[in-house]
Length: 207
Image 1 (cartoon, rainbow, N blue to C red):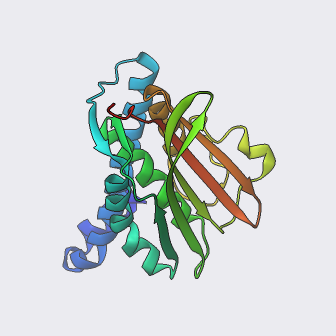
Image 2: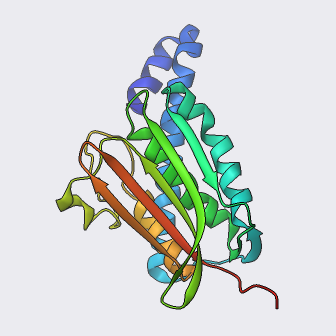
């Protein structure tokens, strides 16, 4: 753990370069945990500040895909995409939607075995008289057990106990989607993979 590393570092200052990457990883993990906990508290207290502006959804999705390419390549995972050519304008808090997309795509890479695939689709769909822009993230990873599916958007719930993480990413993503009057859904089968989809209300076309 972090304590052990710091102790060793005091005893072996000459081995600083060996310990630094691990200390950095541990610090990043702690920072993420604190940020996530603060987020959960903010959502529970209703004090999330939304900074809304109009963006084109495809552009943001491409930004996240480019940032995640390295992680995918490290695991020999094919990260592919199919984006609807017509721009999909949505009014969002860009930082928050970036957070959701990053969480979902990095999760998909994380839970997919070496040589697997993660495929991202951006499209528009009508549900109950409302037009939505949607982003689907499909993978052929380990999948989620049926009994876990009902709980994965709850804080601290980790369907896969083997993987390190705060167990807060999906619950925060769920809250962010609700604040955007959108939705996040999941379909999954153990051993086959998962499909996460986020839906955002589409800006009405200028008439």
